[in-house]
Image (cartoon, rainbow, N blue to C red; front, side, top):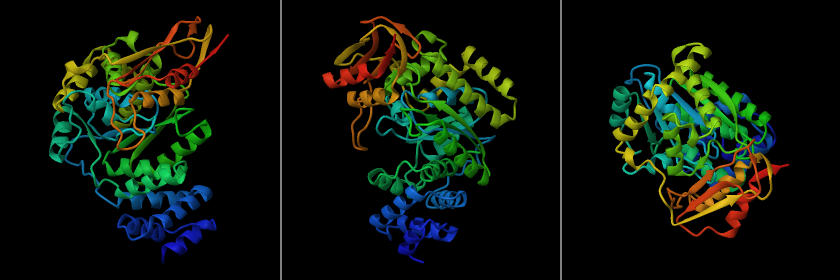
Length: 417
């Protein structure tokens, strides 16, 4: 067996065996196969796809390429969630304290953002003092004592994925459903949770542009999880429009706390509804309660303030300063006004995401420095009636906001008479 034979086989649309997949994952992780050869194989997979068996074996081999986190010393059913990424997606910041406040242990490993997709770790690190690098002992102790911990992924968690993703990013092979599914599920399974809720985004600001693509990805990931002995539930949600009102690291933490405080004037019902759905699914798979009871319980823990208390506790136990969670004045700001009167039909999530990156809220490369206070505050949302000249968004940055950025922000709002 050698890598050339494996490339030829996949090029000719033949199914790879478990041994062949294990071989190239092990050898590539150990730097024994060249990037250009794996690039050829990834392109063959991108063009010809993979069978369900191949995708399962790929995921399993990637899990086995590094550490698998043992959460057995944490009492209870551990539940996790994963979002395929979106603009203004601060759902993790809201749902993890909700679930922990209900007594279900949440052991959450999250990543940093790249491009228009924000990362939970970046958002939490925008809070002064918050630590996302925890020792295994700290992480497990926090979950046992407080029912919650959110940390960055360990260096040796699925190293095969780190290498493959870096290569996919520069070879035009990111948009392959088997490769996406294996990448996500290998990390989720290796992170040790008993149950996983998958929030699959669909629309202009997501990787899956159509419902059909999102459904296929959701079904593929669910099948992998169940074969590996995990309870998995998938939910498909809209990412044609940004989620909530705030797009930007500190701004999204502020909005999350406002929602948990019950202050709906500073957030939007689409974020509330999404958080309630994801939280109830997490609670349902962890406890076996009915959908109706789970929804009711989740809403109650928001309304009685216990979820807000848990959110503040999470910030505090990981070294963060709760008093730092507020909007800060930036060096530059601009108002975006409606170019015509009518109803906002859509706020293009992709364009708003690109604007937030240009303002400094997102990374163009892994080495990019973030401006934690930069971002976009939406005033207008889809379905809202506006008059020409009404303020529909505000831009914030500590670097000069160019005319190109302002134009792109204006173009994001589709206003129909």
